[in-house]
Picture 1: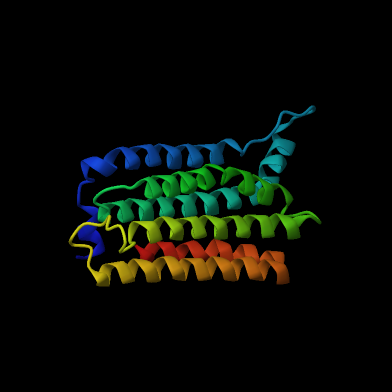
Picture 2 (picture 1 turned 120 degrees about the vertical axis):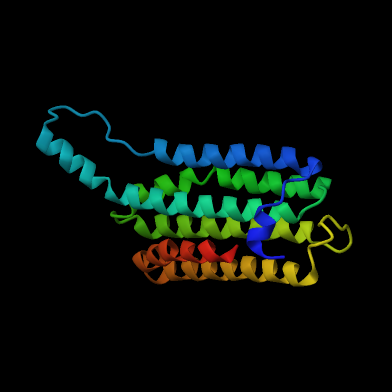
Length: 207
């Protein structure tokens, strides 16, 4: 069964509530990203200096777009994954809750890197940012590992071994890419964050 065919499947009654709750958290995380951007009120505002202040927020715009794209694509991956899941388990729901926990906190590293990328603290800011998405990827892998466990079958019958292996490859490749981004941030912060921005292109075709 192809990815586009899986996307057309309706969630089962047992996973529908999990998906609905998860969709809400993903939506809140994306909304909070936007709320972090804005020019604070200052004295002596004019058309000219306001334009300058707006331009100076460019690092925050870039961080926002990158995080928005990453969270959006992870939501799509989460959506596709749950089309394969027939029934939940306590372990699956806890792992999904952990994933939502780290997703909801994405605005924190996003604000940090946007605020400090053009300062002497950019090294820590980028390590924190790229490392955080590496953590999110690890939790995503944990969720899928539980879902695809053979000891407690949770997947639909059509989720063949081939499909499971394909999802495994996609998640592990994404994990490797995020690990490379994190590693590069130790060599050069700009290299790390640039690679991280490019990395979400992988998720566009992964699922």
